[in-house]
Length: 112
Length: 112
Image 1 (cartoon, rainbow over the protein chains, first blue to last red):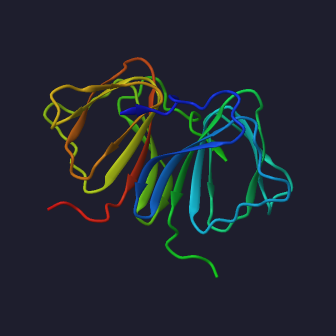
Image 2: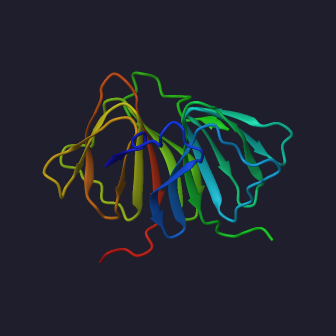
Image 3: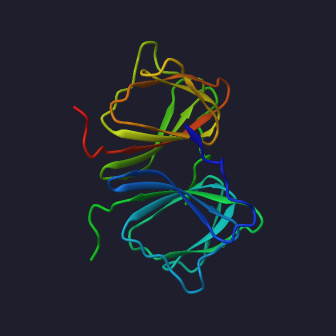
């Protein structure tokens, strides 16, 4: 048994920290710790796998390419990101840890 | 987008509440809200699927049949329960909501 709030990166981290919590065929659960990072300007994630995310701590702005405005996420908010749906992290709160739980899962059938 | 701490059952609930958050082939994510319930005496879960759990709020005692003592879970604790590993919930905190995130996943190969 481990705790998801333990072993956080040092406060001055320049990069997001990715920690794999579980890896099984077609499934990967990871913790992501952001400390003010955002996706690079103009960059969009476009992943073949689905991704279910739960914000555990902190605040973030999540933007989908098919929506005009970013969504503000706070602790407890969860959202499913379908395979190939373009998205980016516009902002995370500077000066404290924003902790995400991400469940990456294999899509049964991908759209062409 | 939804919040996992929203729409909790009324405080006087007799039963645990199960809420499906995501269902995909081989994967099911659910929220479980306990309000003092425990597994019935002598009852053991023995599931064909794997189950990764994260305690989001509250406290619980989780017992594995292959261990002499129960593990105390508090907020942020997570544990993977392998397929067919017998376990039970010995106790959850009465008088408040204990909130579990459970990721049920299909095992690639089951032990015989």
